[in-house]
Length: 284
Ligand SMILES: [Zn+2]
Image 1: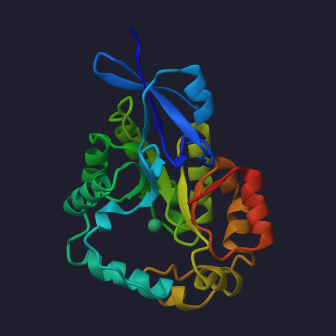
Image 2 (image 1 turned 60 degrees about the horizontal axis):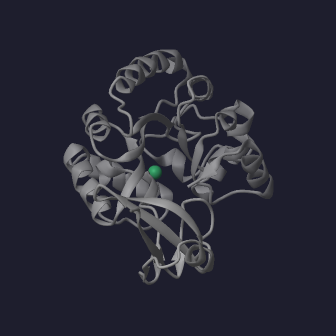
């Protein structure tokens, strides 16, 4: 005899859109393993499966949570509120402590798991963290970060990137994390390199993620070519104003065609939002 059980809750999130009111989930147990058979309205479930036990679990049932943008290797950095440029200085300071790396990634991952998160989009900056994530029981994407604002070294950086990604992809396992690529920002990766990376991602159906439109300072850099970001020690001294918003710059370079997930997107125009939606990019 088939062994069924109905679970109901105030909200059931199927992972596809908004939760459905007064819904329920029917579970079937086979060999001590429960599987979800269907999610639908409670009254329909109850009439289709009469004499089946209904258990109300309370507030919500949902798939495990997703955190689409993490920097696990910075898990030991303290919270640093403030302007973007000041934050970057704090990150640079933190890196000098030697606490960015595998140990931090392990601490961060343990915290996520404790919160019920099993899917992440992590920005990865070291090979040992990449190997660790690809061997872990997490799902999602490990985005290999690229920073090189100098157009003169675009080709060299790109060739190295292709070789690195090829090696990482050999370590992908069914059900495990996938390898992606993350050009850091529109101003810390040169235009020719951004174009090459976007084309590579598109051709290989590889996930791509980029920080964009994170602060008014970034907008100022694009329109005026100056501001606090130019005062940072990592600033590219030959940077030229693009005369457009960071999002329009990515559109012009064809980066949006690779459907990157866009991190931040908090200093944007109406046109930016329309273009991102039209390109089918996800904002995280
Ligand atoms: Zn980030």
